[in-house]
Image (cartoon, rainbow, N blue to C red):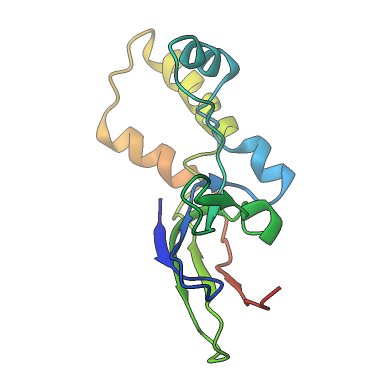
Length: 160
């Protein structure tokens, strides 16, 4: 999703903040499409790929060449900000410390697994086994999709 590189703790080393899609609350986390199923993750590991977890990562640069970065996203409370698109790190309040802004949202809940499964089931039952859908049918289903307004986030750097 979004990435910004900036020295967040004023130690002279650039840190990295990368966004991903992970809901802040348990309800939205359960209804969102999670493309990383246990079967898929097991298969990927079988072929040598690492584990994947959806979350924002704030990689703090230590300046140490052996272990240069540490993920402190969970420690800062910035790991779960839902369907986030862009982050901007800068000193928003002019106190000399870089803060973090994250913008959020999507016009419709296209990632709602309950709605997607229900809609797919309806399309298959309506059109038989083939999924030859007319464009006006897609628009009808999209317009019935729910909307969830998400707030943007801003995190003040308190220098801890």
